Image (tube, rainbow, N blue to C red; front, side):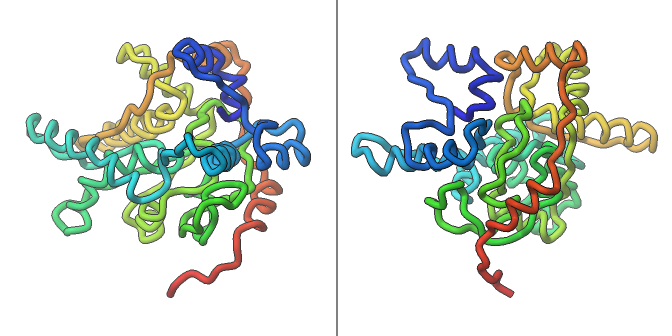
Length: 297
């Protein structure tokens, strides 16, 4: 478990331990990849890239262990499209079709899963639906990253993939949206952004939590820190439509609850949530480690 989340979300760890799991913060001393990171950065808050490296190493060195991808690679995104196919049927039942589809993006699977069945209609010229991918300002892969071949993990154990990336060594600030603290995005989603079929917006965590609290008080559901980024964009989109006097059908993915994130809400509600954005120096250092592999014309 990424160290930042291990420390920020103790009840998530306790839940896993309750059902029999052993939870280790990453970077750890249990792998060569983790040991290398700790030797260079003893106080590292970890990242999804580091955790993936450790998980891959453990799977590769233990015959009774397998590793299952959760995001980033295209086949995972396609598997997740059951979300969008179900949403499409539900909207048909309601007699509606979205003018805009919004979601949060870490590696890309939950948003691609929702949006790709609708994106297929746009690419076929059947609709002019807009697509908005949201991300944290502390890890702005789509809004500030470079489109290049890069590794999916810090220790360079995965294949090179073409994606928007901040560099596989980039370690984002420890914002509470742990699922969005990933240095790159899936190739297919990155291509859609690159060619203008999908927009990208970045928000600071106080902007996101403000939207999360508003959503909780109006809808009765406490959202996770990750989808609060999408909710921020949904609220802004709805206000814009209202002020323009234009009816607008907005579809978004509430990809997780916030029941294990109440410390983050407590910090926000009492003015203790730091406003964290990326540092240009860290971004430059991360991009310096992107492999020098020419992109196809």
